Figure 1: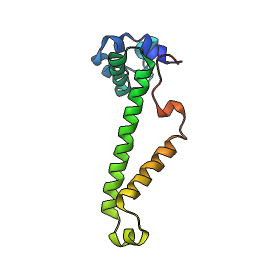
Figure 2 (figure 1 turned 180 degrees about the vertical axis):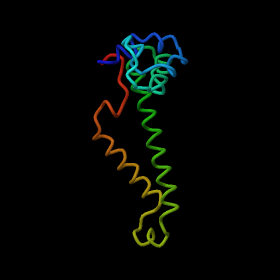
Figure 3 (figure 1 turned 120 degrees about the vertical axis):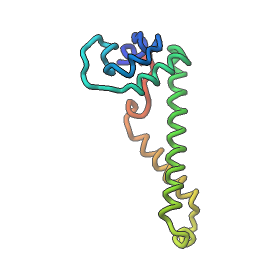
Length: 130
């Protein structure tokens, strides 16, 4: 319901006004309202970049979401791999039969499966047509 306000009818996103995105409230230009204290310039910048790449093509917005999410999952894996290197002793790993990569992969998969429980609004940005 807010996609039309934030993307379709938002001149700042369509015209590429980066300065306004970083100096105004999240809803200010979309609703012509006063500031409500919801400052989210990175989200608006992301919407602007998606609009420049895909126009109002909903599939493009979803592709960007999938790409960002895949990168986050890889980052979770890399962080877990580093933490396992620091925290786990080799004796424990030899006893359990698990490799460090396997443990990191299991952790990343748990992150992935837990993320599915979160509502759709928290998991991805919205398309301009919902």
